[in-house]
Length: 207
Image (tube, rainbow, N blue to C red; front, side):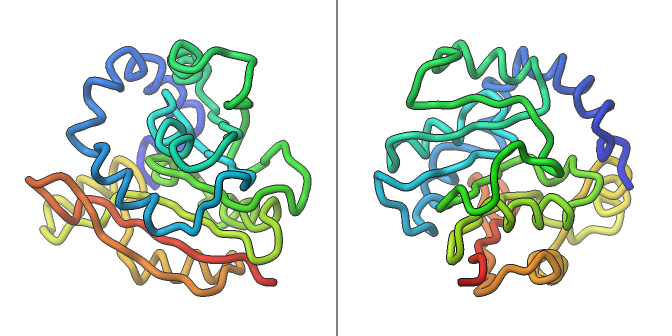
């Protein structure tokens, strides 16, 4: 387990990163990648959508181009403060919650779509979190998770393993199917300097 696959350390990490997150983020997760990921979903404006690990609201902003409202959750108060600056704290179209991906504060069968980008790499137990996603999804609902693709070079693999969760499509397939998702598919995306830096996995909750 990497050093940032720990909730307390991840919160401390984002206490400082949140101040520059929106300046750093475009180098690894940009608008073109966000649009490419959004295009993988069957989104309609009236759908109920949850953004887990919303951070400063970059993905939330993209989701709001497709749907009317988004529920946004993050464990980092510092990241949420940045998101409040972007959207406001209490008014729709964003409903903010501070919480844990492994214990979502929502009722079963609530959402049409659960989205998470740039968060799974910090989860100590990703399968537990993915099962929570399935719990809060309506039958047949869609899930989309963007995470870091496992590097090919041995030295890069050792570094990745020491920091956080990196995984390939085979591991993603295993995790999502163990969590109970169906129709699991994967896509690779990234900025021009590394077009496969991210792995995006989509699936559906059973009907």
